[in-house]
Image (cartoon, rainbow, N blue to C red; front, side, top):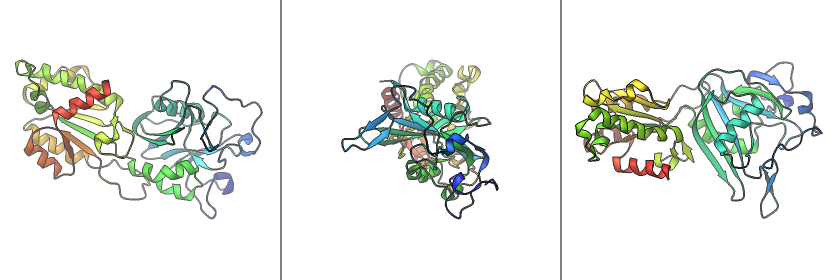
Length: 343
C-alpha cells in the first residue's frame, strides 16, 4: 500500500495494510461524493432495472464484469468512485450491457473502456451468472495471455491495482464481488481440459474413416474447433459455473498423425497431441499432467485439481483415467454436445 495514502482512500479494511501491485490513483473527481455533472448515460442500457418490490440494479439489459487474472500480478481491481453505487469499495471493471450485446462481449468492452484492458489480452475461462429474474449479472473470469499496462480512463475509478487472491480479505469489497470472490478464487488457474481419444471417436461413426484415417482425424479436429471457441455449459463438465472455455486436447496416433490440421494450425485452445506409441498411454499421460492446476501467486489456499474430461468409449481407458480423477463421456455424448451448441 502506498505510504502516503490513508486506508480509507485505498478501500482497505480498518487496521489492514493490503499489498497492491501497480496502484494508480484516479482523478480527484472520483474521490468526491458529487456526481460529475458532465457524466450522462451513454446508451439505453445505462439505466436501472427495477424489481417488482421496487429495488433496483444497474443495467436495463443486465450487467457484466471482467475478472482479468494474471498468475503473477493477481486480479485487476477497480476502486469505485466515491459518488458511485457502493463507492469506496473494490470490484471488477464492468457495467451495463448494450442492446443485443452478449455478457461476455460487455465484460471485455467495459474493462477496456474503464481500465484500458486490451481486447486481445484476455482469454475467457469461466462465466458465473447471478440471475434475479428481472436482472442478470455475469462475471467473466479470464486469463491474461500477454502483459499489459492497465490505465484509468474515466472518472468512475478512484484507483486501479492488481491484487493477489489472499489480499482480497484486507479490502473493502463491493458486496456483489465479495459474494462471488470465494468461487472466483477457487477457479483461478483451473481452466478445464477436454481430452479426446481421436481414434475411438472417429471409429464410433461408420463414415468410411478407414479409407483415410488422417482425413477423418482432420474432420474431427474441424468439428471440435467450435467447442474450443464457444466453450461449453458448465454442467457438461460437472462444474458449478454457467459456462466454461476448456482447452481441448485431441490425441492422435498411427496413420491419423498425418492430419492436415497439424500443418494448418488450429484454435489457440485446441491442441493436438501425437502419441509416439500407445494412444491410451498418451491420454493417461495428458490426464496426469493436466490435472495439476496452474501456479497462482498468492492463492491463499491449496488449489483443487484441474477438471479433466476424457472422451472415449474404451472401457479400460475410462477406468484408468477415472482412477486419476478424470470424468468421462462417450463419442455419442460428445456429438450431442456439439449439436446442442450448433442449435
